[in-house]
Length: 422
Image 1 (cartoon, rainbow, N blue to C red):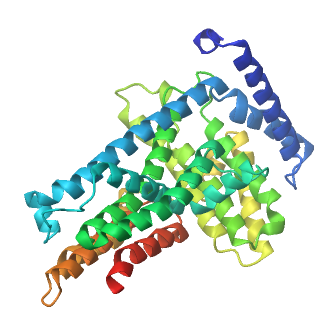
Image 2: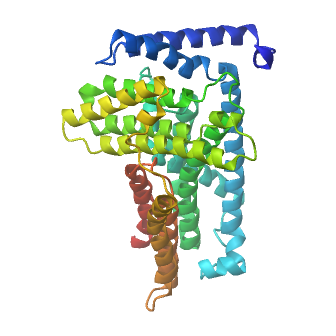
Image 3: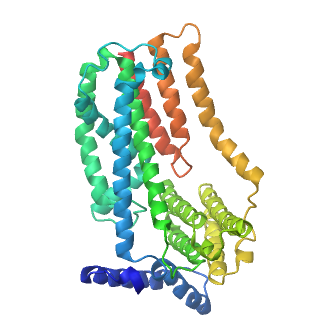
């Protein structure tokens, strides 16, 4: 089929066939698990869901290459971030801007070679990445041990080595830091805090980069409604399959991650824009607005899922997603967006302001508190580092759970103040 399959190997063709058969079996089985559907509705959902999940997507080998490219870009970003962090701790703090952030820098600095500092930074970055997506990382590890039923994203062959690096590297890093901590406590606090925050940021960059790579040049046979059908079908199936565990917070968090990921795919869907001319800005805005409303409707279902108090509340959300799936299969966007919230410039500005208020307060406190009379320079530097790092964590999107942020926040508290209290 044109250039997409011109250079495909026999092994890749076999894998593609196995992937298509697996999706066909999955769709046929899961459609019959959705209650309340008539035979005619099941007959309409099955081909539409199969095309959206398999036929309408890029070939498996193309998705694998894009995932590999995403991993390479993430590694490059990690190397550049680690180099920038080490430069700031060793050189940047001695510049004019650095002297404004850190009041006291001893001549010997961290009193440790840059190579050792880099070896210390790597497990700390890994720890930050693991903490910021702790629940997902645990599911990936369970899948590596034989239970692959609840993997939302990520690769076991990447998470298992990361955990090994953390288990071996973090104790060694703690011992090494303890030996040289007295040379410059503030500098070590900067290294620890920024490494943990950078680990969380690295995960977010990886997710954004993967979404962008998957959206670049979509398959030419992909339909405009495929992403909406796929997201609604997978969300509906997952909710009905998890009905017996509706009161388990970990299961609710897993389901919410699925719904939020589907909302991002719908919002970033570029397929409907392929038929729009470059000068038709109004039409492009209208299409994006329509998909943005559907994405916001999915996020409302996700937030409602976090507030269920009974099985009837849970069933109401399931039935709503099922109705949305049927409307998407019929391409009835009027029915699909009937209860979707309106996205106005004022509402988007209000949402951005609500998201930035907390980080702005933390950053302002981090800059002002160390300047108050009676605050010692070393203590003020530690407070500034903690608050600025907390502000960076608060900027992470809602997909990053409060539990993950509290995990990293607790690690920062212990790392920055435990040594000072001894």
